[in-house]
Image (cartoon, rainbow, N blue to C red):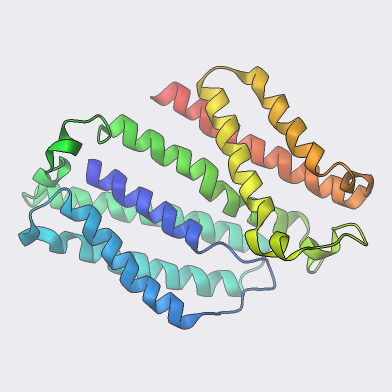
Length: 257
């Protein structure tokens, strides 16, 4: 169902807006903003639902919203208490459980006579190919590779460096100047997202020869830092795992859509 795919896309975007914190730094901050996020999340589900169902059946998004809020709360508490391996398991179960719950709910809706919400109600969407299942789920896979891949990177590196407290700050070569822009914009995370996006596109375009150019360009930005062995190993582990995620996503797309 198209609405099911749109709900999952919204779920992934929200997950990206609440990134996984570094291990040992899972303090709860910004409670007021988080509560505002609950209302914004409800608004997002409501707007998406309006594209598919009459306003009299707008209530169909409410159970999904409640489940999502409960899942966010359970994930935050569980990841705060878990060890690195456990945090990865909790995160994967969070996504798997949400997808399974959404699927079961939509199965219930179909059997209850609300299956008509499977098609867009507005002509501009119904006439375009944007809401075709293969396009929606292809875009969902792309988002999983780019956005969820960033969260998986954090959890994977937490496991690798689980015996090194605050490894992310210790691995930068001594004397490196961290500017206000670097600290604020989170350039490393953005570079990783763009890297996976480009690798994914090259794979589905059957142009694997373009991938080395991406890695070369990324290495040039860190050229001086690579003289530090510890940072070089950290950089290599992260880059290879990031590319692996993108390759897997790209090949799944090629063989499935």
